[in-house]
Length: 101
Image (cartoon, rainbow, N blue to C red; front, side):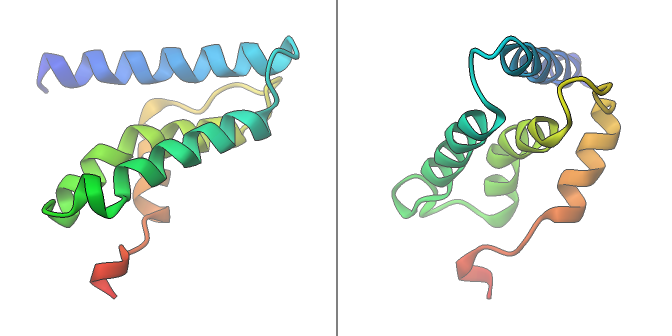
């Protein structure tokens, strides 16, 4: 596996863990994190940003956001699922983009 992929995997899991700590400490709610992630995803899938992108490129851009969204849905007091489990869940929940319907 490419070292950069492993670094991104570690970074995503670190951000997910930080998000859980922020929720546990009452700094942010999981709903506030969810809103921020949804705004990020909307910005990345908007026509201005993704107009000329292939579906696979859009999936690549949105993968980290969707993984963090799923991690955010886990209870803060529960153990975080592994990266591979979260990645599988992202693939299972993927829906077609508007231009693919």
